[in-house]
Length: 202
Image (cartoon, rainbow, N blue to C red; front, side, top):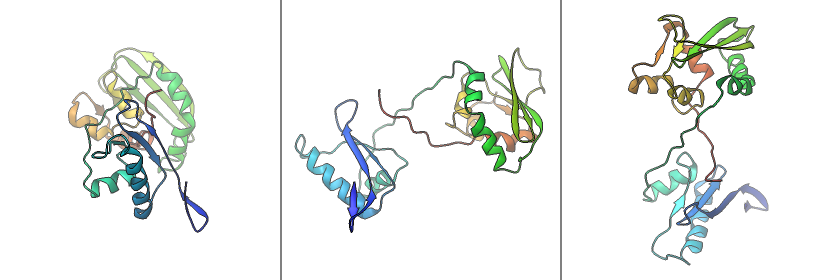
């Protein structure tokens, strides 16, 4: 914890990275001044093992990573986890409050309609009633040409519903990704691209 005038302003944690080659750092939002203090501290710790080089594992979307880049730090190739959802119905039931909240805070507040999503093997039917999801049904069959609001093949669907990629990004590389014109906005509202926060190896 970094304190200024007796008040806690920033926290950070650190420890050996999973491969034992550097240090994994997690921070709250930081100022440039605090970033300097953290890096000076880490340099002192790391120099015990290697005085010429400091290897840090830092999230790319953090203030600290941006600051390291400004100082000339270089990044390694990043690694992306592949997450699979074994039961889509259970998963959607778990995130039902999140989906309803996104609808509530959008232009679709109070909507009543069915939204059909397909991975080309199974069709998921999200039934909205006054902005709330009343039922979630699954139909195992190949979808008819215009029967679904959204179609994404196989595990590509996970990239959308887990917030890894936007539909537009997926469509750019996957031509079998299809959405009805009138459903584009509600799909973006329900499944926006988000930063994810998985930890390192458990």
